[in-house]
Image (cartoon, rainbow, N blue to C red):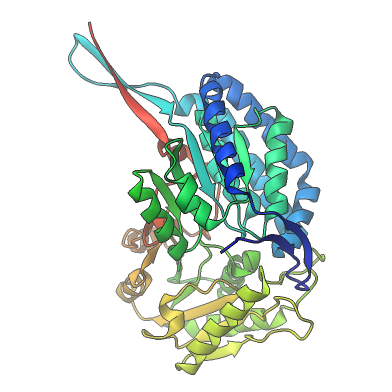
Length: 459
């Protein structure tokens, strides 16, 4: 089935622009160009590559307003949030430019006095990136920045609804001075990924950020061809409130975190776990916050509520909520589609969600707050870990030792204590269980698609 690359305004459902899917011949040519460029790009010095990535960072900062407008039309993100994403992307490129030499430095190994041994990091070749629509620039930066710094080259298949931003990113790399084959945007189909790119010996690995189903499919194809994968998949992250001096403030912090990107983030806190002595006040505050949200045109000043990424995404989200309510959950706010059309959905507050309900184990990728009541730390930990996912978690308490004690028992790739989950260029990002494998960002990002070559010298 042919993949359609088109820009569809989620606020109206109108198609703004269409792009032709790459032909098989174009995919093969891109593979050849990427592999050929690798032979020269990998031989440039780390300092040269870092200087070019610094310029990429500068271009993102210079074009922030323009880039934010592009993704507003593609996937509905407000301009202020879009500019924030562009700024974070700029910081990621600058971080790896500034730290590439240190991260790639030879690592000496202790051994006999008459020998010298070290680990030397070398690039591996052309890589495939498959990226999602929810953070069009940031997701690419997480993959591209460390791997270009290493000396790898990249083919990038972006989400079909983000073809314009995908094209612009390739243009930015060229504008910054990278060789044209170092980063190549392709409008590939899923079949071309499975049948052409992954079996090709010129490809040396694939990184995917997306759904659990997509990750499993790509990992299976990569495994057949003995290709390394990095997978950043779904999450159902717990946000545990053990105690607080200000319930309203705590509720506001959680709500604003959950509504970021209209709830469409893998590391968004999708399960709010609250101690029973503050539960009622918390639910009252969070319900009031949800009811105050109103729809607005993406980018309109003062708006928290943007549309979901597409009408189809809104349809699925509403179906998940309705099924969960029909199974016995209580909906205290929201859940309705707006009459103006498009992909707007009222923020939802759900309580009484139990095992066996659709909303208990499935990831609700939208503006939904699910609040659970617990009576002990042990119950909070048990509930937090009762998920097939293991991306991140946040634990809050006025007693940091209490937060640490609970956080240490959470089975996830990331734990934030007395701070909402977030993404920073220097913090490794990734999960366990069905949330994926591998790490992006921070120093660990340059340990993935790299040949850690042992160099042993006998004196």
